[in-house]
Image (cartoon, rainbow, N blue to C red):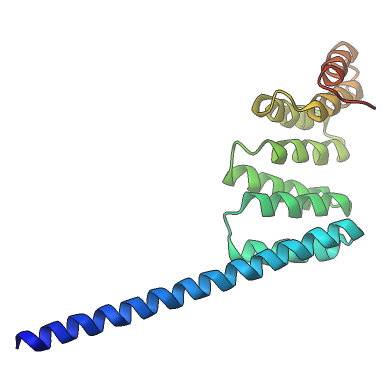
Length: 169
């Protein structure tokens, strides 16, 4: 009886090991596919092919629903296509997944500015600045949003800070 138990245990261990190796193979293939998708998305961006970018990032999101960067990048592509509502939805999801992702706040601020919503844009630029106080572009664009609201003193302060940080118009 004892030998049979050991054989079953060894057999189970071999089956488990084969399953783990199979899983690692599958994970490795997924990583390779994801890497290729991200490379295609970068090439599409360089060519200005935002539809392909969106397609690549949508597929990448399918691999990992918790990838804030993929949502942020797809949002940027929607923004470039002139679809700010879709962009805002993706930036919002990126922020939900990673509340410390300053780029997502900055990009959502840009989309809100495009929609003519300077108050929301200012809120997002302010958060981007809080997360990265050296983000000259966030200061500059928050200054633009303040200017759109007629708050020239605040706009001038942000433009001055952006210049201090190395922003060159």
